[in-house]
Length: 499
Image (cartoon, rainbow, N blue to C red):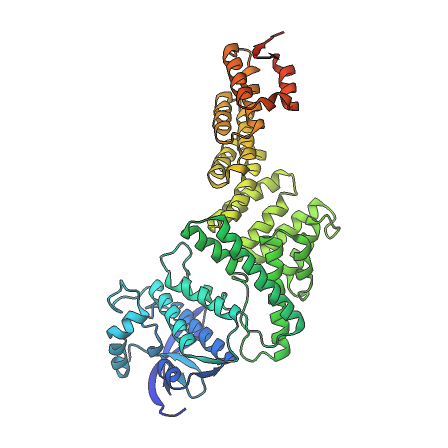
């Protein structure tokens, strides 16, 4: 490496559960200078360097003191003679000229948020922001060979966007979390991999299209696009240095099949297709094995022979993932527990459903979760909480889908003996959903079957509804109502006959 200079750098030593910092001296080039003078780089090397910078930052944050590096930019990172990266020691006297350079306006405006005047104080958010800008710098200046695929570019852009938007609802909480989101490096595209990648690209396109048609709000669209585009987030994605090509291909295939399995089983709710992909993964992957059996059970296959075995499998998968379960995992568990009509299952749905809502799901997923929670709270005897979930759903769902939600709320109020609240829901629902026969019939039944009912009020209500929709009289439900409540209709005359 020509024109090398000596630099004082930080050396990390791990021991006793801590990462201790020391000092070292290396000859090399600053990362910014290297890419400006020699942009050509192999794709494997590019991926390794980006992850190495991330790992250095993670090690620094895990240190015993002064946990924020502050000066995260390519002018404070050195490439030594062996191609290894190091962070400059910003406490070394020999590096003070580089610290002053980092404080210059030209660097600050590119690697610090606009509202930050300089590197005066450190924070996790500013370090992650600097990492995002550094990755952006590398990708802008590097001429990778072979070129990054559209999939790889897309994944890197999502990481950068999340690093820079540290005030968003889903900021990175630590540097190690970012390591899980890097795209998988495809070392060798076998026919099987090419097929899988084609399917994955098509599914992501479908998700983006669907997301754009569900909500018009920019904030919601952003959340939905995150969920659709972050396929494979939280899954192991790195090919480590020293891995052989065959091992890399096998690892890549497993990761791709895992992503596809999750997409089909969780996002698309298609257990048959999900089972196919989970079954392709090596036997050492216990999570994939669990999901293969669960997907089979959801298709009524004999992969699990009883509800007891399904429940044991769900307990097993939860213990395997512990605190690393993603929203995709939680949605699969919720659907599986719904097959178990037991008090234990209802309790599990409530616990997992609340966890899922805490991950701020996109609208479509939130609707499904709240529907499951509403039913689980009802079966668990917590009917007021069930009503709360259904009331939330009314605000989220399109008008044409609200009828069943009104029915559920009315039914719960009837079970609670709160006829007045049930009638109020009927009134509201019938006014909003003018096409609904069901809500009008329930309103008539609730009002007219009461022993203390005002007969004239009942007659007026019936007249109002059949005048607006004469076809109501032809419905089977109305004939049943006549028999139940003694309703008589002859021409324009309507009256009640009580036994």
